[in-house]
Image 1 (cartoon, rainbow, N blue to C red):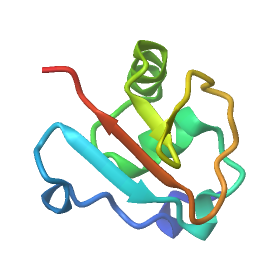
Image 2: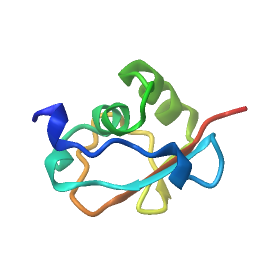
Image 3: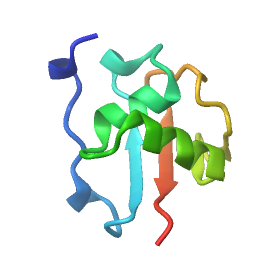
Image 4: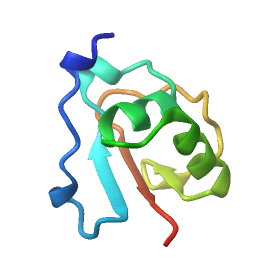
Length: 84
């Protein structure tokens, strides 16, 4: 997958600077959850994504997930809140 195929995350679309919510675009379908998060959230590393998942603050389709290797599907809604 090319990073150019993924639309950049727009933090202004989130309700706060610490809340992220997006729908998985086609080019990210099949990617690991931690990689998909790092690809769309500017400045978020894969390691940080893994820590957020382990902390239990990441939701896929409204359901909490703790599986970093979970493959995301096109159209799924991913959301998380950064601890303050």
